[in-house]
Length: 481
Image (cartoon, rainbow, N blue to C red):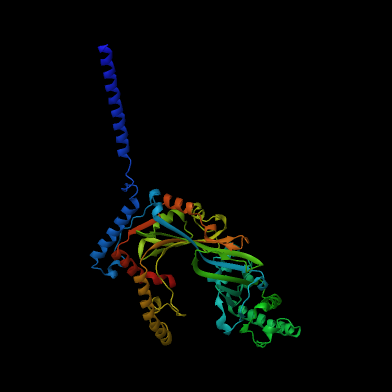
């Protein structure tokens, strides 16, 4: 009996020892797991990179005795480290999609179903004409134009017919897609466009006179100068009648072979997070949306890395240095008539990748364009020197003081650096409501940042980003040259 008791005691002791070993093993396993309250090595990769970049930058800044001119010296090299976005850091990054602009190409002015309060045709004669290529180069499918025809397209002009709310309504002249260059090589596009639109205005006056005799659009036509179409105020209930008359004039006036009129409405530079309605348009030939996503952090400054972008883009696009850092860049895809040269990983950030016509990556930093019509007030002085005439030089000199003061204020008030991606994508004719989330895949942009060393982070230190903006101030004008 005693032996049986001893055996039980020994068994109990062995069982307790085994339980203690199991418990110690469990504790050991738990000790290997990272504490949720303390950042692990993986979690801090992005922040370690940011601290390293900031330290390198501030070290050069101190060596330069806080002189921006030293940092801009071509022999000064500031080491920049790029990184992927670790999975654990994704929650700390903000992704904000938005719509930056829309171009709606119409087959007829009668496709505008919302009322226009006025129409103007060549209100300032020749000065009413502007190049329309900057407005349309991301909208048109440039693959349908030869290299020579693209050079003609770049010189095409148009005029604003009306502005209603955010929408600008334009009429212009462009080469017909597929046109042989020899058909249009000797045409003066400014003169051709001016003569065409002037003839449209003359025809409209004749049509309006006939409509007045027939009692159509009476309230509008009785209050306008029927001998001039430089500015007509249009009654809301009669707007459709007036637009139909305008379209008849457009259809009746002919252009040289190889050229066609183009009617389009656009709104740019909005970055709206809200939906945009297209219900005010019918007879739509094509719609392109400028959709973007801003990538930001509450703790870090973020820019794009040259090495990372070179991994996802080809050699057809263009890389631009950002803030004078050779390893920090902006990127724009090509507009030379060939397919855009970016990887599938980039295109898949857009929900309809096969319809993407243009892509750009850039640092979203404060900047603004001056209101001077001829030259930029800073780069104009640098580039032109004494070549320009006295009157132009005096105009530039009057403009650069207010411009520099205004830009300096922007820098001091808006000090965060953000990354931004933008796509120009052709969208189907329906739905008639455009929303940012319809065309941006946030999971795919996360995958892109997880896969490639695209980000150059900096710590949110006042000194570092103020100096970055000082450098930006000295180099930002390159965009406007």
